[in-house]
Image (cartoon, rainbow, N blue to C red):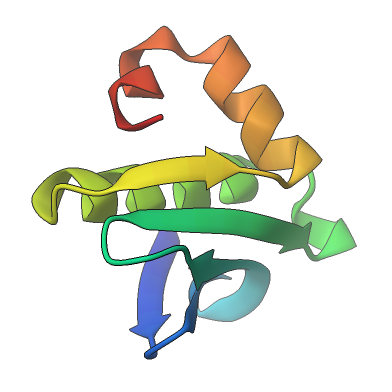
Length: 93
């Protein structure tokens, strides 16, 4: 099972993924003003490639954006591709 947690700081933050209790991925972001975050990097441990870890972190960022009335700028190629493939999350772009 994938569990995603968030660590939000003043200018940057991250979403960390654990798969069955083991570190599986990390997605970092930077704040762009008060109402936007820029996803700048997504990294998944090789053992968890293809298991939905990266997508779970992007969806957690989308949930965070919706709850806080934020927009997301996906600069990271993985996050950008995830938004292109999933129309249901484009409302936060």
